[in-house]
Image 1 (cartoon, one colour):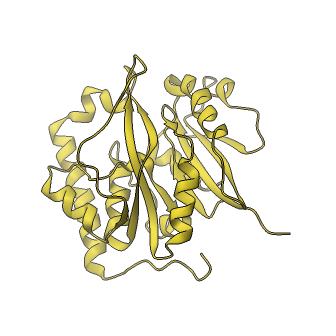
Image 2 (spheres, helix red, strand yellow):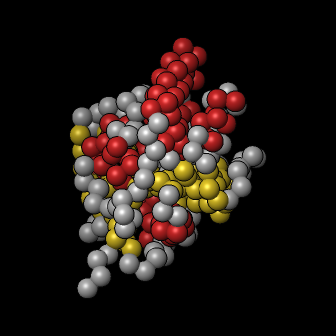
Image 3 (cartoon, rainbow, N blue to C red):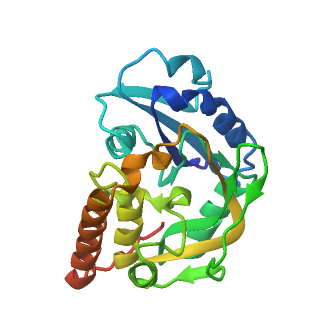
Length: 256
């Protein structure tokens, strides 16, 4: 019997945003997986409360855990310990995958052995249910090593692709130490580290609906504090630069 491969979708959640989980789950159920693949949903609460459990689906593919509160990066890292898949996909609790998103991620990695990670086009999901796109997406296809980092440096620390859409070969994610231990921008830090050591891939089809709502962490005033933002950007750039200067380049294991 052929072994089924898995893409582990990791979701960090805190109680105020847990009510969005059913919609995220619905978007997972709508995924039509490639032959020989299935998904696992790893939900990790950032803290120990009674506010998340009622929103966790009763599905054998769903793995729920709790841990000490430490923001999204810590929660994702604790969840990563339970991820069984060859590929790890990010899904924020308040976002939704579009139909076919996981299949496109998997197919890009299977077709391109030198590619370590995949991103896709994003639409903002506004409170009234409408969507809003972005200008300046790259062309579909390979993102050369270092290209996202170069764009970020030249465009006021704005990346050319969205880190909330990342799907990553798990061995590469582990080799880089996962998400940065930052209060915010931890996913951008990972994206730039990935760009420093590996080719990526951009899917031009929309892969994610990125919800905008009043309780959004990135909408808080503290997220835009100039001193903290400057510190985050400095350490993100320093890590990516050190990786690039090391000369190490990711090579997927034979048979990936």
